[in-house]
Image (cartoon, rainbow, N blue to C red; front, side, top):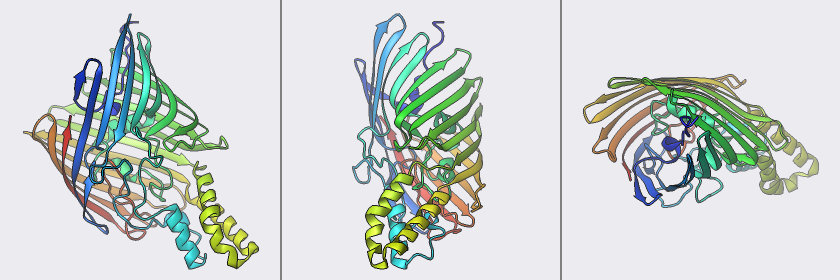
Length: 423
């Protein structure tokens, strides 16, 4: 039994080399570069290859195979110094207001600005100090129990399937949202107010079970949440099957995702493949949308009279409920090739939108990383996104989604160059 050990998520939660002082470690990533965007501004970015961060982690040996652990990790935006990045471009997202085109122009624009603000906040809406990770836990001879804000089991599997390692303009994650884009509801990368049980066996098999209470999920809107994964890492294989399931404030099923895939390393080559399914018929953001309408839009409707104002409100609720639906099946294949001090990465990803909008999207990406040392590397990545129908997907970074192309169905593209230093 003593051989069944904790799989502390070091790769996900405690990244990179650290400076140790007794049992406390300070670590981080400083990543910045320049990004050119089709249909958007050329700008200095933070977190192109990896989200910039500052973290603290530690442990205390308690004897007999028991150990107390903690991890606090804060987001840091090198371009601004704050902790809440915005979308990388300032184009207006339009899909959330589909079906509302008959609204008075001023009202329609106000709704669009309120629900999908151009260049609006992209990550860390709560403006939390330790948004990336905040957890405490106990390692035991029988596994480990961790609690706090943690990476979800489903996302951990997604991370091992992505050829671009969840970073740069090439990451598969930039097209894994509904047609309304990142501002409708993000995937549950992390979940607050959650507890997980985690084990790894010497054979390479492992598993995670996570349960979240009221106020859980990435945006802390779920009434409850659970996630589970099964993984295998041995003989060059790194595979997993993960599932996340959230419930809205009325306890109705909300975002559900299932991801399967991983990688295989063969000499200087590493091959990736993954399949991802997402379904959401009850967004936990409905309460936010309705509250926003009543606070920001309703005052504009007073001159129209109560019957017209009520009819517009009902139309808004009906359409935005429909437009936040997610039903998509996606896949990605890719590879990495180590050549000398560098690495070439390439991938193709596709998202089959199974809602009535039928807004399929395909992404092609190619990148090169030059490793100056174990801690520092330079990177250049180009990505192209082919949108259809109502799709407005645009490449982003590791630290922030790209936002939207200037108009529905218009293709997106980006080129990034930058430097990453891990300490």
